[in-house]
Length: 85
Image (cartoon, rainbow, N blue to C red; front, side, top):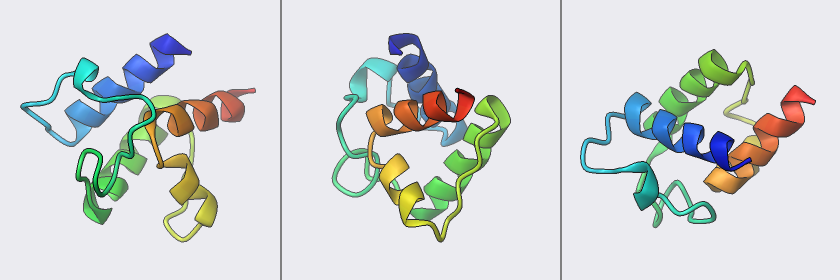
């Protein structure tokens, strides 16, 4: 699971071009949006596309579940792992 979380962090950084952020700067249970990394809805769309390409998971922008999955790196990792099972 730690390797998956690291991959997610790298994907967030590369897909959103966060030049001053390193994977170790992103805390696993920290919110990704709002007060956490400060990402917005456009970032969510770009990240959703990147997650679909890399992990084959599909997230719906309208779904309340998607908001839960995007809550943190931990939540994304759990969702991806569950989707692969």
